[in-house]
Structure formats: C-alpha cells, structure tokens
Length: 216
Image: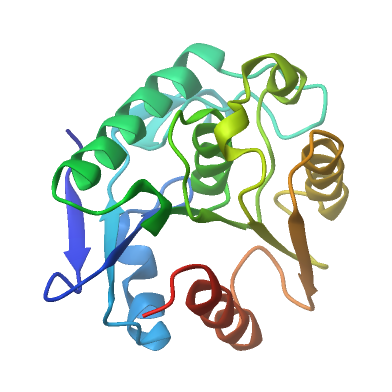
C-alpha cells in the first residue's frame, strides 16, 4: 500500500482520493484541501512510489508511472498505468470496506495524478461519485472503448486546464475531453488564465463541484 496523508477523518461521510503530479507528493494539495473547507469529506492524499522517469533521463522521482514524452504520439507506459490502477482500486475498495458507499467516493488528480484518476475511474466496477481531473489528459485513449466499465459511464467528470500550460498542452486536454464525451461521459470543462498549476477561481469552482456530487 502507498504511504498517504489523510485529512478530515472525523464524522466524514464521503471520500476523495487525490493524486499529485509528477515529482511532487501528497503534501502538494494539502493547502488546497484546507482552502476547500469541506469537513464532511475525508481526503486521502497518497504519495506515488519513487521510480526512474525516462522523460527526465531516468532520474528517480515520485511518479505514478513512467513517462516517455508529452507529445500526442509519445509511447505510454501501459504496464505501469495498469499496475497503479490496481493500487488505486485497492484504496477505493478499502474505503468501501469501512462503510463508505462507492457512490460517495471520488477520484481526483493533478497532471499525471489526474491521468491515473481518469484511467482508473472509467474502468472501476462499482459506481463512483465522479472524477476531478486537473491540468491533465486521458492516457491510453485508444483502449477506453474496450476497457470502460458501463457502471461508471454516466459519472460526472470535472476537467480544468490552464490556457498557458506549457507542460501539458491545452489541445492535449481538449482531445481527451472529446474522447471521453464520444464515449458517453458527461464532462464539465473549465479553462483558466494560468500555467501548469491551480488558481483561486479554480479552487472555488472545485468546491462547488464537490458540494454538488458529494453533498454534506
């Protein structure tokens, strides 16, 4: 199991599992959770394992899977992605075993963490509350139609991206949005005047979305 930070454990009735970006750790979104101020939601912020990352010349850092490139035609680490999918599945099932209904569990993630959130949620075999996908993309897009689980085909997906993102191009995120919509998912799309980061308006909008899909 992954090391993790857990916030708001007292009297929580819902769970958000929030994955950080490449090279960061679970502490990265701890300030955002405090800003959201949603005490009825337990937030689990796992730390990705350390692994060599090809994009960074094999330098070892926290990463959900290996990255070979950020272009639309770059090869993808399917083995690593699916391995992490299994790990996150286990985390979801652990929450369900504590008495939290699957439809009160939401996956969230930023950048590489958002890619894992999208990949895992679309394939999970019990209904989830939704996905929060920040400055990210859908990995293994060509596999979605054959691997998606119908039980989650109508879960809300909240996607946001910065217009000045120079890490993951806005067009890459828009292409992922189109694939998700073509597959039948209701995607709520937001753009902000920001680089590869989060902004105050985005956090306000995230709070409204979470209150809508995980009401107190």
